Image 1 (cartoon, rainbow, N blue to C red):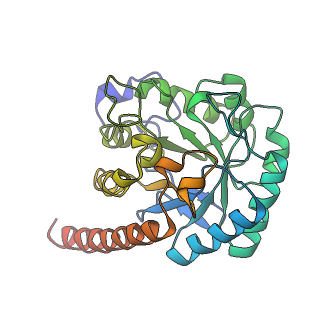
Image 2 (cartoon, rainbow, N blue to C red):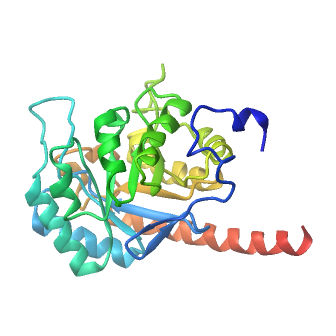
Length: 285
């Protein structure tokens, strides 16, 4: 452990304070245990039929958790804002049908208590990364927290946001790199895969990558997914929709179930290769 890492202002998330990597349990699944976690689902819960159908397809493809937005922070006030509690109820029904733990975003402290009755992991979105009252509130719960990096946040600002959660007693935090704003306009954001090994060095918390928001274009998502795993990410969170062209939000970056199935095959092959590589390294290390 370098002196530079040890002297960082975040005390609880700092790897110098906790040399062993943290493994976070969500339902019956473990994030950060050495095998890639895949969280998948639509950007928004649009109806009961939609979320039950896609959850079943994702389960068959090998997804480990289901994502879906019931509360949606949208740039335009006229865009679809989500179904709220109704959407959370549909997610809970999808969990009951498939066994998949559910991850969904909470936007404010007011909706947090009700959301905690339904979801298995709380997502803090990029726009709320520095919503300190919300960070403190989720820190007082026992729910795992998926903390997305802010739109233009530095890694240190992101880790300090995680520090707020741990400082309240909740150490079950999963970091999520989802791309940052740069001068580049060819993609929605610039997916900062540099952050993966840097975060692994600085903190004991697991980190997953969101290539869907990171690039915003579905055809680039598989390549960036595999690049994220090769960089050392503990998993992926992906947007998948039955018919992306009719999605109420983020259809342009959503994979179809068939595309997701094909990507999962690549993830499985990568995981098998990584296991054999690690075994060989231990033999000749």
